[in-house]
Image: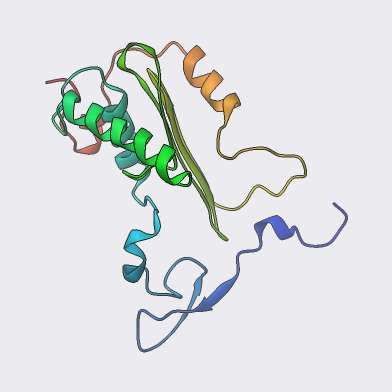
Length: 174
């Protein structure tokens, strides 16, 4: 890349609109009012919370968060919505599709100035990936799917330990 600065790591700063002092903040952290963008299709949460949501969506059983019948209704509605509107599936998802045996595919991605993020599930498996920056390498394909990450998720020998209680959440199975 030469001897100049690595521009892939350059995060722009702007004046905050969240306080009267208007300090400089990294873009995406207060330079605009996000409260008025509720209906724009974003899905924002801590990674552990997204992992919990993902676990609820792929669990074949009722969970402390939602009954399986409710999840299936939501995901079926997302599939119908995507077919009707061709842009977003709803329920926080960009993509949704039925799979065999009552399973579903779902995907949500984000491409911000300061980060890129993806949540994807495909039946029994899923993953969440968050980058504190942007992928700018030429010919890098990451959106809307990340088959390389899904392949890793499906090949790892995960044990049955439920880690959610380590993060202050009830166990997934009740």
